[in-house]
Length: 282
Image 1 (spheres, rainbow, N blue to C red):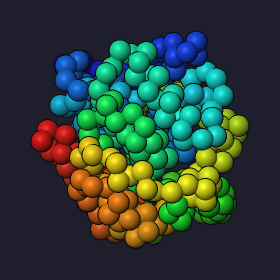
Image 2: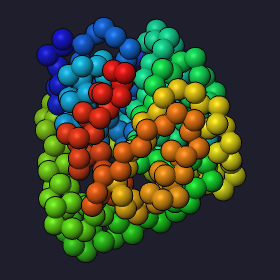
Image 3: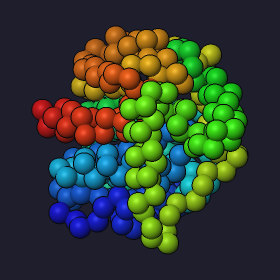
């Protein structure tokens, strides 16, 4: 097993259709890789080290910046179909025929599209804090982000305190711990922040996902899927997003964490990692 961790794994690049994509790898080299796809505005350093290292105890874990994100080159597309195509092209560039996908938030939508359009490339799916096409929430993401930034400025906190966690003392303590873990990487190759152009493209894709598409394609997803979220996701509502997603998928397991929001997998990282590894083993 590699000695690298989320905090020390070097940032690498691979040529994807003449565009460099930034990625990191942690965990053993053997076995079906687990590829992680992240949320709107996020780059490599926003993945929780506790989640990455926990999964990497058994799995080859690959984190990637898609086109235009972080250190990756090119321009971020404004459709999830194009993001899914870039994901498959990245797998091709690494010579990966079949993978497991963990998609969180926006990354969960990309993972849904990959599974629908390229079913032969995906063995199992984990969809966290995400929503099916047509569910309310994604189109309001821009306004939600702005509201959280304003509140964070007024209260001297990080926006993720309000975006990902509940106002309860236990959830806010978990937010503090999560944000502390994000600072564990002290090497000089931390990822670049996402650009305003990338955020704009991602928000456009999210608006189209809610307003202009249908979830009917999920009925064709035959892979086993683990669907997870907090019980009160105020970004993309749990009831109309997460629960509906689990209902639409033919072979889904559902895990809902109490007193938790959009960042439930980070608040309950130990529970989530164990559930994820159990699911991926079976």
